[in-house]
Image (cartoon, rainbow, N blue to C red; front, side, top):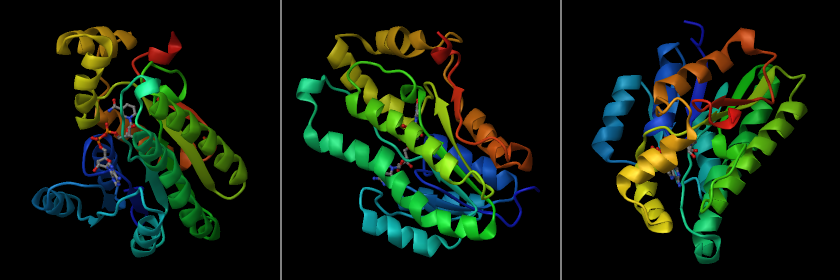
Length: 251
Ligand code: NAD
């Protein structure tokens, strides 16, 4: 398998998109380090399934990130995926939610990246994959912190791609449209409130309305894209922002 002997850390991989990416990388032979919260038994079962280790650190804390990176050992593949959402009009947006979203969706990726890059450069190979979002390219109302963080991670990714262009290390974003995960489910009640809509109206008239295919993106499709970005043939693919959004940002 082409990722035999490669070591990957996927942040936020106890659930949703990160878990799908961890499974896809593992299926190609990578050794996987999981990160994220969850019930102890479920995480132990995931570690068994994937032959993985797990780091349950809170990525809001830079010291915890440093400890995780030290324990993870030399990484060939870094997937910055953990993220959170909060939906509110800007004038009511709680400042602590703003800070947490920027810290998790953007600043945590800066810390993992700055700590992973020296080893990748030394070994002359690396893949940095950041889960951005369609909201890195376009915006929706009531998601000010999320949209700012995702536009931010897209800019960060381009910058490190340029810095690392001659080192064998690539950096790319994957930008999904709506994927049915706990993150999306969790924002439905607040979106109902912010827009005065029913649950069905939020799903069909707010979420799927954005996607010309009228389908949610599947987590496995994102896993497959992450695997492609790790291939040797993707060595010249860097600094790109890969939409996988059912045509949303084509409009
Ligand atoms: P999810 O809620 O299913 O998973 C989030 C993961 O992050 C979980 O493993 C959770 O435990 C972990 N996590 C949350 N806070 C953390 C913290 N402080 N420290 C460490 N881990 C933490 O969400 P998802 O939908 O799979 O989202 C994953 C990424 O994909 C996010 O960056 C999200 O913004 C992005 N995204 C999701 C969608 C979507 O429609 N679901 C669309 C575009 C982008």
